[in-house]
Amino acid sequence: MICSLDQDTHSNYGAGLLQFMQFCDSINISEQDRMPASGILMAQFTAAHAGLASAKTLNNWLCGLQFWNVINS
Image 1: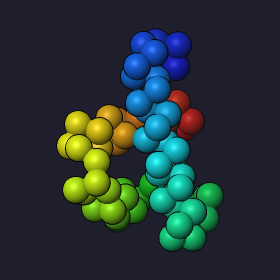
Image 2: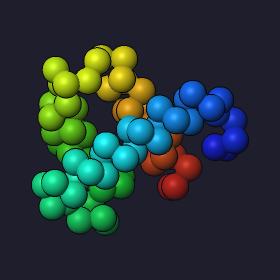
Image 3: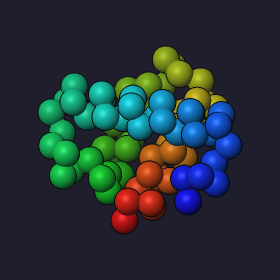
């Protein structure tokens, strides 16, 4: 399934996953509580990056997190 992504999408999704993991580390979210992520955690992640990343970037990151959750479910 991951092979279905083109290189740019794969790179963008990977960047989002890295940002999410770093965010979770910064607020001491345990690994078991990261995925599947709660709606509250996703809202916190989005709010923390609002104004720092473009809407397009945030959308790519969130799509990547959704994809990662699907392939790891």
